[in-house]
Image (cartoon, each protein chain N blue to C red):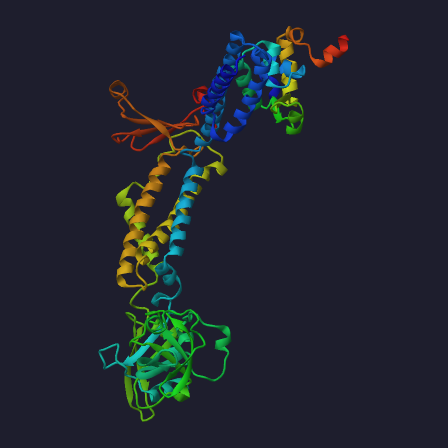
Length: 497
Length: 107
């Protein structure tokens, strides 16, 4: 055989195999091609002469190569059958649960990524310990004005109180602040009792354990705004010494802006023992309510009478620190409640008519349907909660009334539409296998005339049931009905379940 | 369940050829006279039904004989059971392709 011919035929054979290999599924292609190349080598040795040229031999080799096409198609069909088995999940209860679980996990993951949502879960006014009030003079209409003297505070603290069991005082002063590397400036400093933050239940950010247990140097907590402006958001700020007024103090951490929810703009909180509170300046008092104090609250306010030693009385007023912005869970539960109330206006809450059927399922199987509906709603709630958080706090750093409105609107919409979908989906699931019924067939004019019935029929692809849905509900056929199919129908349903 | 599998004549011949010791595609083609477009797809189906299994020859053996490595096929236990059932259905099968054990007996 002449070398050019040999080369041309070898290229031709390989091209045929290469073309056939394109039909083979990708993951099997390399092995398939290797096997056919090996076999082709055997055929060439057996059919073509070692010297000279044989057209009949070459024709046999080409015929052999053409056989690769049916083989490749066979593998392709086998692969398609495997995919078909996976596609039989379509419309099943498992697929529905998986999709909803993925949505819940995705919305939760987004919530973890958004700083606003993370902050809402850790340090925002809604997270200030419940049952805290701010006490002020009842004659003062401005909630943000300081009205309590240190003497009053000391007196209350020394007595057993009926309405509260924890008190803390603070006042806001303008102080010069100097740091080695940042020069001096004027700050609004909140001089507070050392128990203020523990009373509020707030966690200080970027705190160091060893700094907390340090010497007697007074401690200061920076506001987030001052920390960013003055220290460029240095995460290792804890432990730094600064000079506030006449004293050196140690920074022990940062508190996010607005997290305390207290009146008065403060750049730094200087924590001092009560003995160091200077008389002559009025300030604010935060108190923790007892059970009787909570029961005496009316419209987030409580009236307090302070009896003096000279038998005179001062009228005071306590207003709740958490009255402004409810926490996200309360907002969400309210939205869910509203959605449940509105649901009957959106769709029928009936799950379909089953009582007319003579079919009786086992008690275990009869739990499948309500169980599946329960799982759907249980998965819907975290989806609605986290999506509403994502949208309400995606941009906001601090909770606001605006974010509360967004959360209510989003949670309500998702819950209402989601539960409507859950009920509608439930009504179209086969009571036996929970697969969605398919292939709707409209009953024609002839049937309408002779059977006095019109509507749509849908069938379970597992061959278990037929669903009859009337187009015009009548007194004798008002809601959908299931027809349970016996084993004589099985030959019609080829899908493997 | 496997013994209930009913094979076509072609598939039965291929199983018989494998049982007779013709263990790769081209040798089965040579033995049975069937074209490649019939033999290989039939072997894919038999493997899919787990009546036969395949394994690659060691590359060192193929290198020693200066040829590409072959993919060898052999019968599974289910394949042997099915072949026994097919022999009853196609009595001429063993005469067309005598199995290794039968050849040994005749010798």
